[in-house]
Image (cartoon, rainbow, N blue to C red; front, side):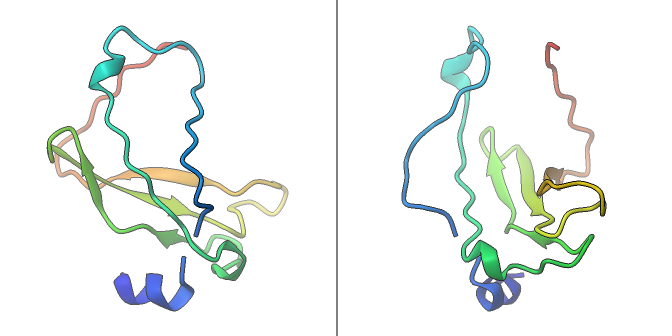
Length: 100
């Protein structure tokens, strides 16, 4: 995977800004952040359904392992978006709690 990342030289700006959506929960102090940078975005694979994965990263005291998967060329010909997925690398189920 590191060879792939080096080959494509995956990037992001040097900005340290944070964007919050919605109101933080009461447990907001327990939130852990991990910054993942895909460098040289224009040179990532751009074919439909072709993706690049980030290296694995952990959060919650190394209890959960994740990676981000990005489809620069999209997953559907009719979409004009760049899908990004949070992929669980855990053998156990991860149950997320959210409010709509």
